[in-house]
Image 1 (cartoon, rainbow, N blue to C red):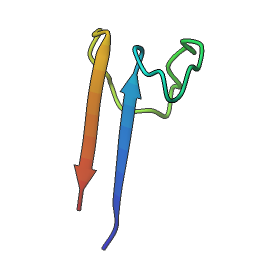
Image 2 (cartoon, rainbow, N blue to C red):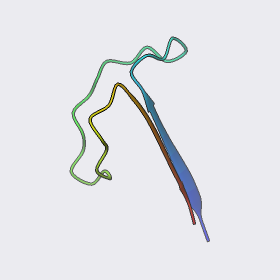
Image 3 (cartoon, rainbow, N blue to C red):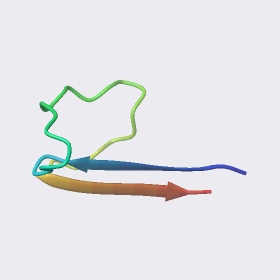
Length: 41
């Protein structure tokens, strides 16, 4: 039983982080400016 959420926002003033390349062990994310990924298991 575990839950984890991934929030990727390019337009995030709270967290101005440079766009890093997607990791091979990361889930396939859509090519969008604002991506809201949430996984609950």
